Length: 209
Image 1: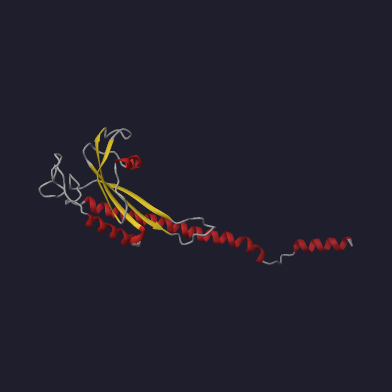
Image 2: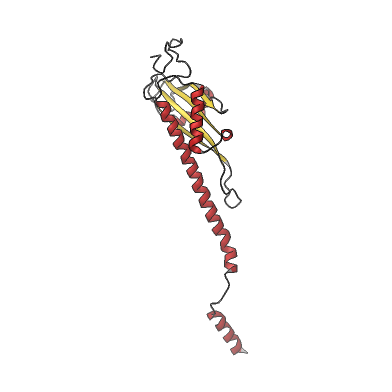
């Protein structure tokens, strides 16, 4: 009897036959999670990168303008953004704001910033003075009296695998880009206003200087 048990244990120890079904049950969920998570995270970064590229394109277009910006122009920029990011009208928007500094411009914490104007496309609200609390950190230092163009874009992102394993929910991908006007000393919306408060004669971006 003892020899039987010893032979059985020795055979069990040396036997290399088996089934992969048990191992597959444990390994498949991990492999499935790794595949879907990798694809989802890569796709999310790709979508974010596309949004920033589109925003940089819009910002560069605005920085080269010398005429006053109109609502039709901003609506056209929204169409450019939708084309570059492959998004629909209902789940994206853009907002263009012009920021200026009036005092303590070299002091990042105590500088006095204000919005000259803020306009948007597709339902986003315009920014006002109260919003500077949230956007101050995103606006770089600037010379006193100069202007910066602050462009925001937003698009809805739906991950390809929004399951319990990946746990990556739908979200809005928002991008912010700040650029300086290249040619216009007074970057205007619809009409340019001189420092005295009257409309400029020609209404282009060079008036008011």
